[in-house]
Length: 287
Image (cartoon, helix red, strand yellow):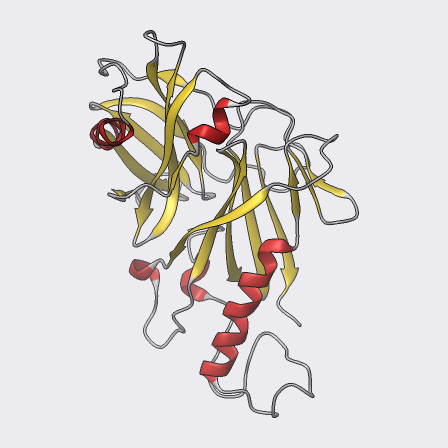
């Protein structure tokens, strides 16, 4: 869930009958827009909205970063009977082979939301709406720590991927929810496949000590709630595995490594600040 306990389970897009919560131009559709047609238009709008914002590695950059759609998702456990099944997407913006920012894009309460999160090791990230800066995190988005008792990164990429998967399975993610007593606590599932594998050849140009890396997700249904970054970092013959975690929800979160809590995220973080590590931008669902 991205914005509250009811979240996408009560999508304000009621694509039933003629009551459609987003509008189409009169010359594009008949008065009564069918549910399937409206659903297709919404999905098309979500796809187009990836380009609404330019993500830049720093304020001096001349060109925006490349966006990659890394997954489509639904929060099936919270869907209600009779509600439309609309897929949301997660996008990452890649700089020198490494993901620097992410966003979940989904409809809720009559708006299309872009829930941004920084994955940067620095505080230089800038996002523009083609005119003005709308987000500029004032701190690094993630904090890396060494993975305890991890093997040395293997020499071959396939072997390193097996190592990353094994390391990932040592983590357990939990949604502690939005309620003060944690009574809406839910265990999350680690997706077996990575969301994004670093382009190491592209990364080494700017960071020769980055040996490998991948982005994984803890999900509810297929809805990403926590992102896990694993990176092999260090000079040759001295590289180590490091991990970092990032939130993809407004709910509280907790991650354990080998049974020990190594990361938490508070409920209801500020998501509307220009310099916050995460920021949610929204636009009315109209064409």
